[in-house]
Image 1 (tube, rainbow, N blue to C red):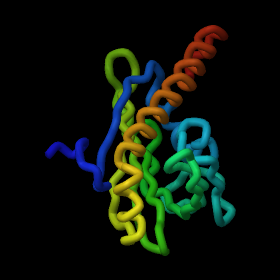
Image 2 (cartoon, rainbow, N blue to C red):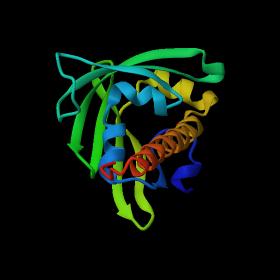
Image 3 (cartoon, rainbow, N blue to C red):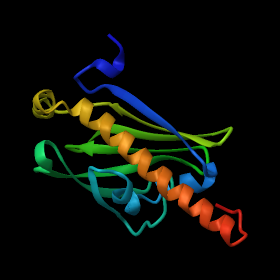
Amino acid sequence: MPKNQRWWLTEDSEELVVNATAEHIYSLVSDLPRMGQWSPECQGVEWEGGVSAPVEGARFVGHNRGGPCKLMRWSRHGRVLDADPGRHFAFVTEEGGRESTVWRYRFEPVDGGTRVTESYEVKQLPVWARIVDVPTNRHRELLEGMRHTLARLKVAAEADTEAAKAVGTENV
């Protein structure tokens, strides 16, 4: 069975071409406090430990809302794993003090802009979460969420690019 037809969480990805530079799209994605502007699930993120930049090892807490009728709310601590501007950005969320899910963004220049790939990989989930994931079809929800996130990033990045062109700067 292809991975995108599984109902349990393992890993998956979505991609979209955005008419903007890889560096600019990276700057939007890696600004984790803005993640709530792109993601339908993330409600907000705060950096922890005096950090205010997306550097490897930086810690944060993210607040989420999802599930049926968006009735479920939860927060997760996380850590930036990889921060390579214009190339890739990755972070891991924690569940019960253990690494749970790795989220990755890859930026690849292509004709017409940048191919942005968002992916997740579940490393570990507690049994209760696996049980809840079945009736809520969490896999489907994550795929829809990634499509939504990428579409919102596309709108924002392309609007920034057009605005920069209008004022004669091409640095976004």
